[in-house]
Image: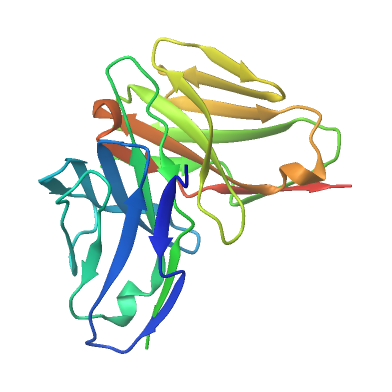
Length: 115
Length: 112
């Protein structure tokens, strides 16, 4: 199992450009998440999905969009890149059930710089 | 408003000592609390989970306590080693995994 795979690892964008951060998981997890991590600020939830076709906003969704057409993939779209979106982005997945373990598995991250 | 705090941004200890990291939260009622380890340039890796009805959980040299009255979790690493140097994140899990909320992390350095 590869776990959670994110691409690309690094990207530099110009202001106003758009891009899609890719995330795939091969663990058949229902739940998937996108976080951003800024220095000293911890992880902030952008969007999450509890299953194919279902997405919901997290703490900091503005400027981002997601889709979840299959269980495996959960891409994050930036439409008009802004310097404030410079950050490290992490995708994660989990398979929670009531009363059972809900650990999250994270990808290696995408370091995005908007200039 | 809801808030998670970890006791300090950075903690330095001598090899062989016990490291104790603190996670405090306000205005939450978590079903679970988790601890993750993050190395530079990598994603967080799960370490331990403790449920709201559990007081303590152990795994090898790691121990976590969870006091829902104090709204606090303590994370201990006994017989610490330089390889334990990393950032440790606590996370509150509400709605059985629908929302993970992370603290800012504590950067632990174990000095040889």
